[in-house]
Length: 183
Image (cartoon, rainbow, N blue to C red):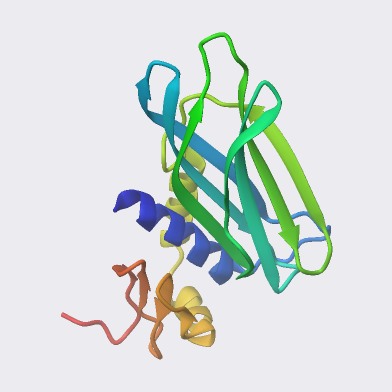
């Protein structure tokens, strides 16, 4: 459940902060993978992809695994509002001497898009930068966050649920409690 909580926390943080940017690049875009199991050359990897934008109303993220430059598996978020998240388990085949990469692609509904690949390696899921963002977001006082959350109600039903008081659940887990506080 901590993986789901971290993903959803990043989504709320990006929405709540609503920071403007001076360029067309997203506020954040990245895919991560961590091999969960290996049987011979058969790999199973947990994959997490996140993109957040301040410029476009809709965005999507796609994560792919490439072996020696050829795509062998992928996940796609589809179009989501301002923050797109995809997560799942992908299987692929690679020997120890083959080059494995994790690739991130994003598309904003207003037109900008981009992609990059990097060497795959063990990544903590959730990654440290997501944990740091959660820590930063949760240190913001309710007086600043709750009015923003209230304005975003009902959120993204089933993913980020926000009620009329600003109380926020992420994937069914309590995340932010705004006044009046429930005891």
